[in-house]
Amino acid sequence: MPAMDDAAVIDTETQMNTTIPTPQRLKAFVLNGGGHAFDTRTGRSYGINPTAQVAILMLQDGASRDEVIGRLMDLCAEPESVIAPGVDAFLEQMMKVAS
Image (tube, rainbow, N blue to C red; front, side, top):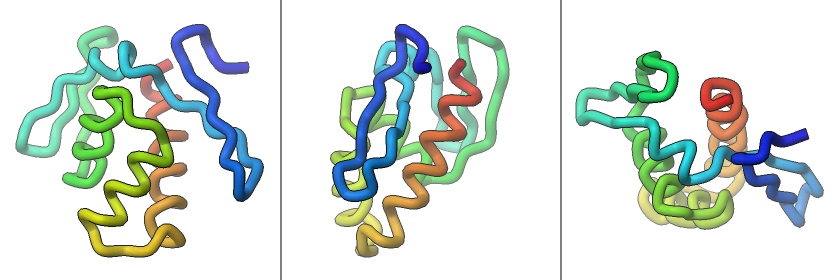
């Protein structure tokens, strides 16, 4: 069951339930250009790649899973079949570190 500050999203194609941290929780992550994310709530630091950094910024601004996928498809010039699994794996990781 998602925590109160998490949002559950159902992927209509796969009927997969993807839980994502809310923008409020993600705003606790401070990003720098060197590939680091610092969680101000826990004091932990994480190494992230440039695509993950863009995804976090979009999610902090309130973008949905599908919006993140669409924007990354445009930015990376890759099909949804490549982008969506990576976004879903990233969201699963974010749920673990942002819990």
